[in-house]
Image (cartoon, rainbow, N blue to C red; front, side, top):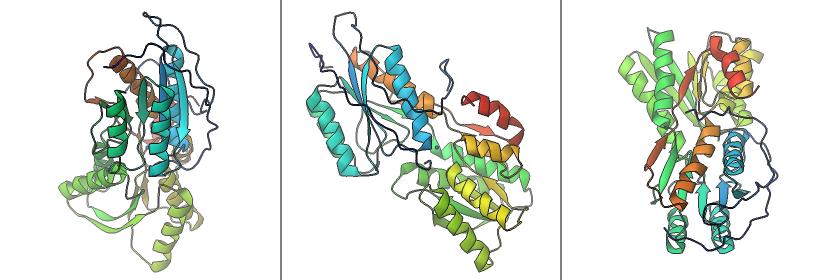
Amino acid sequence: MKKKMAALLLTCAMTVTVLAGCGGSGGKDTKKETKTETSDSSDKGSGDKISIGFTADYLSDFMSYVTDGVNDACADNGVQVSVQDADFDVSKQLQQVENFINSGVDAVVIKPVDAEACQPISDACKNAGVPLVVVNTAMSAPCDSYVGSDHTYSGKLQGEFLAEQMPEGGKVAILMGETTVQATTQRTDGVKAALEEAGGFEVVSEMDAGWMRDEAMDTMENWLNSGLEIDAVVANNDEMAIGASMVLEENKVDDVVVCGIDASEDALNRMKDGKMDMTVFQNGYQQGYQGVETALKLVSGESVEEFVDVAYEPVLPDQAEEYLEKIGK
C-alpha cells in the first residue's frame, strides 16, 4: 500500500441536512445527532498524520448514524476526516472522491450513490494508490473492502415475521426505495423469497416510494382509494413504513400489518404506540465506525476481509424501548 510522507490536513466540515431515511457491536452505542466537527489528527508511530475522506449518497436520518460512526472512529484514532454529501448525484460523488485524492487523503470511505456506476471512483482510487472502503451498499466495481449488512437477510426477516403473524398467508404490498440502490432490490427479493417459501402469500403491488415518508403516504392513499385489498405493507425502510402507517391510522384501518427496516427513533416510538408491527435494526453507526477501522488497517498495510458483516437484527414492539436506548435515546 502506498504510504505518504505527510498527508494534508483536511479542514472541511459538513453541515448535515437530515432528510428522510434510506436502513455488530464494537463497544459503542449508535447516536442520533450527527457530528459535524472535523476530528483532530495525531501522530502515528512513524510520525505520519492520517486523513480520511468520507462521502455519503445523501445525509439522511439513517446516514447520520453512519456519519457519527465515521466521526467517532476518526476521533478515537486521532484521524482527520472530511464528510461530504453527494446529494444523490453520481458525478458529484466522483468529484468529491477526486478532490479527496488531490488533497492527499490516506483512504477514501464511501456510501455509493449508485452501486452500478462506481467504476470511475474505483479507478481513481486504484490509480492514486489510495485504499477504498465501501460502507452500507456494496458496489459492482472493485474496492478493498465492503463494510455493511446483508440486505437480502433483512428482507427475509420481514417475510419470516409475516409468515409467523399470518400463518394462513395474505395479500402483501411492498414499498420500495430508489430502484438504483442495491438495498432496494435485495430487500425486496428477500421479502418475496421468504413469502414464497412460507406459501399462501400474494404480492399485490410493488411501488417505488424513493425511501421517503411523504411519497409512501401518497402511495398508501392511492392503494386505499383504489380499493386494493391489502393485509400487510412491507417497506424497504422505516420512513416509508411510517408514512404508510400514518395513512392507515388517519383512515382508521387497524388490521394491516406494517413492517420497516432501520429501527429509527420514530419507527420504534410508533411500535411502542401500537402503530407499527416490526422493524429490522441496521447498525449504521457500526458500519461507519468499522468502515474507518478497516480503512486504517489498509493504510497500515494490514490485510482485511473483503466483506465485514454488521448483522441485521429483527425488532418487535416489546423490544422497542430496548432499541431506543441502544440508539442513544
